[in-house]
Amino acid sequence: MSIAITTTKRGPALLAYCRPGFEPELAAELSARAAERDHWGHAVTERNTGVVRYVCTSAPMLERQLAFDDLIFARQKLLGFAELDALDPKDRITPLLAALEASRDSLVAGASAAGALRFGDLVVEHSDSDAGRELAGLARGFGNALRPALRKPGWLTDKPDARKPRLHVLLHSGTRMDLALSRAGDSSPWPGGIPRLRQPPNAPSRSAAKLDEAIHTLLTGDERAQLLREGLRGADLGAAPGGWTWVLVRAGLRVTAVDNGPLKEPVAGHPQVEHLRADGFRWQPARPLDWMVCDMVEQPRRVAERMAEWFREGWCRSAIFNLKLPMKKRWDETVLCLDLFRQQAGELKALHARQLYHDREEITVFARR
Ligand code: SAM
Image (cartoon, rainbow, N blue to C red):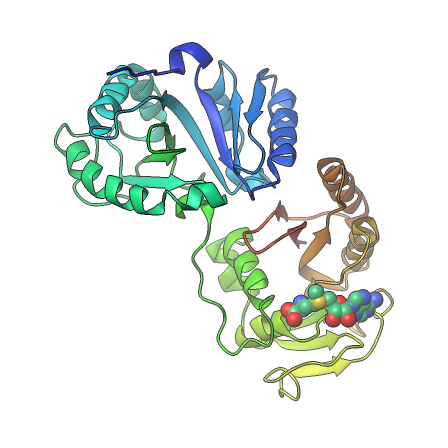
């Protein structure tokens, strides 16, 4: 049986997942962030796989220095420590255990910082591409077979332990896989980095799921509890048909929904909603608001400048807004728009941007004064 553990060939790697098609943006982001920290490597990716590998000898250190929350195009961030190729479909477990054993020293070194050598959970996953999704059945079956085989030699805790590092098996095909680890609190807790959230009930549009995802992934638990309470007030710029307004209303806010278009039930006529037919780039609140959200489809620089004005003028304390990306040079435009916003907004306590699962050609930004 041939096992190729290419940690010895290519070295360890930072592995990150993204929306398929956005590999160039994620590769550019990882390269830029690594270079800022004096790590020199190179990004390897295949178009539409949704996986980018940043190979550099200091990947374990880079993985710790690059906080998951600061990455924009990454749905998940992992430390890849072994690649297995040319596997025999009749027995993938023996070579996997051998690869773990061969990586034991580096895992022990990493574990002293990560908390333990024993993994607290196993995630067998595949990319979010069409080809990747065909591996869903294999991922389930392999995970069920692998779990007891990992427990026996002590690689995996008997019950899931969310404080310990997780072992990820990323299937590329039936015969090729990556082994990687993620650290609790500095990675996405969701398999594939895709949050499984239920669509807010009765929402007038599917966009509601986007704001819901933003609230669950860009805000901390404390921020959600403090900033989204009954009795607070907000504005929704570009609100129609009302999905985002609905998410705020369900959190207990009173909302001014600004849009020339019509709102749909249950937002239309709701006692917590005031509908203003006005231009979202000109309207300003009569008094400061707790929240502003904005989903207007416009040039991203124009949106970034207007959002910054809201903060500079003190019209809101927190905001979530979308920046629709152009077809080309999307990473450059992202950097430019966020720099512009940062420079013009004044002092901020938090600024997080991410391409959410529900985002297509756009990113979503959360900012707080
Ligand atoms: N977030 C909404 C939801 O959840 O239902 C969907 C918003 S939709 C993507 C964009 C909206 O922005 C459209 O209804 C459009 O009328 C509105 N819009 C675009 N430019 C605007 C402007 N200058 N002022 C107000 N609304 C605007």
